Length: 383
Ligand code: TRP
Image (cartoon, rainbow, N blue to C red; front, side):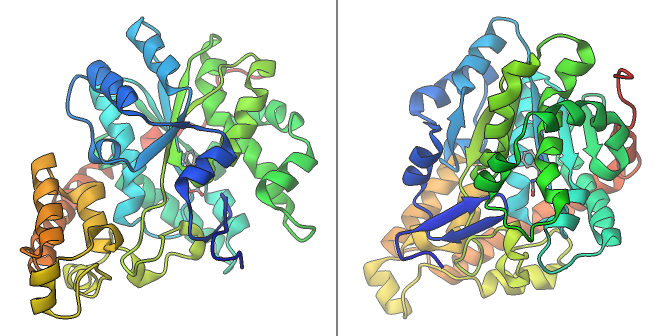
């Protein structure tokens, strides 16, 4: 285990208390500044989604250049993905809500990668192939139900799309020395060779549209900052293959309900998050038992106020469920000043979560009819 001030962040391991500023410096990425947010606001012409306006997406690579290009008539496409190790929880949706917002605002294509192979290879608990395939489709339906446009949204479902991916993967894999993956991902002699190859597949979608159309098309990848190591590899080789370096927009890891970070790689501890397949009474129980920044007694809380920054319920308001900046400011102020007590705060949040689950369920039913038709199975060229 790392010491008190140490942490490890790779796609396959997140340990310790993360200092996000130090992580950004270690990775060498840029800070999302107010100026950049203003530029986004201007280009997209509308309110920014909470994950952007409230600082969860805090780091990037080359985003200003991509936005300037767009403003001058060079469209880009979006790419993000999911390793289907089980049901999605609400925080997993953040990166896709952000993509959906970009697509709706700017009319750009979206490519989703479902890595049922990666999860089979990386799962420490030994997940079955049937399970990663099953969750792959379920997760895809949840993602599409956020409002993606069926005409502009394409899916690489690794095990089913391999014929479409492989011609490009062949070229990419040749550029990645074993010493790089060993150093970047911390692989050991017992790591299976599936994972050693896998990073090539995660790079493919970043270049695929350029390859398919035969001209350079810029790519923007919203992702958790833990995924950055894969895309450093993509960026390092992009130009040598004749493709633009993908731009990135990185989020912090969202804290879970138990006050620990929720990482898919820690095995989705079931009480730590609100899963999309949790029935209403389970959602209610989880929120009621969630770790808060409240005081030991009501009297103390009224007198001293509570601490939103450490509270997992506040994190839910912040990332997704406060529908406006005013509501978010109200909750934060009420919490800090002691006028809003935890029970009442949780009831208000539960109302919104319940509403979201009901509309999401209805959206899922419609999406089921076309979800599989987004899966790309054919390569655009024989070579
Ligand atoms: N490796 C990611 C995971 O384990 C899945 C993924 C594939 C991804 N392509 C991506 C995530 C692009 C973000 C962006 O969940």
